[in-house]
Image (cartoon, rainbow, N blue to C red; front, side, top):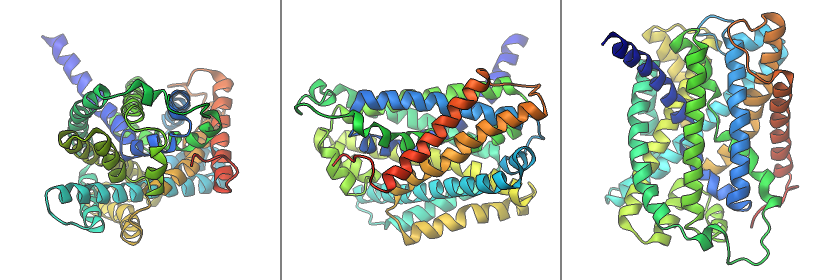
Length: 415
């Protein structure tokens, strides 16, 4: 009996960390994937997802390697300033703030869109701005309470999301047409030229790195448990992304994604396209419910990472007043942005991918290298030596170049 009780106690904290990572990753960003990957289509997109997962998992573990040399609660500001100097700290801080703020804005935009669509199905007209703002206030309250509150709420939301996911995509996969998935209707289609365009969106869709310091704060210096959280959380995300691509690309013909992208690529547009193809009210309802849970889980995870980063940056304490100050500067700017520009979801995800290359790939590699020189990494070291550091650096720099080239229309776009 004692052994069983011990196992239960050790499993519960692991589950909390796994759902924070998986819940942060699997969210509204996944709805951009089939739209931006329609040019490369299924098999090339699958290769891009697996490669991105591998690099982003190891860059997260590099953050952990450096973070374990500091007190629990220390975040990027403390680590980067100490290991890389003020210059890199300024660049990294700007990129973290930009990514987390723009993702928070993207999720407010997405939540407003899908909640407005949900209420419209119940004949209740609610403007997207109002729905998104109200939802942001609810998330702000949960994040203000504690990391444990976020973990518990994310576990509930993720559990509901997994249930609706399998109900939805069990039905979607049952309707998959091999001819649609293999794009048999097109003669001599071209896929490879559109592969590079997908990489920044893949990177943004595996963003959880702001939560690594939160896990160290949550678990203490327990690298074995935290690594398991990272591996299991990211693998869950990868598996669900693959099923999502199968369900969407196996039901919506490739050329139909052009019209979806032209309409802004927001969640409600994709849901309407799937519902139109399958002509099923029950499936549309499941898609709408799943979309709400998807937005909620990633919203909670991303804002928790931003909250802990800002608390470390401004040295706000963990008392209710200190947490209120942190919550205010976490949520107020993106809420204002979402009120002014409510339809920027797809653009926001893309730009998040550009800035995330700095703090989710380039800086983690540099932190691991500096940490090994300074401390010797006594508690944990990412496998692969300098070769893994170089791979993650190349991955980050390559993603940044792709986004810059794309911004100047120097890469082919599927139209």
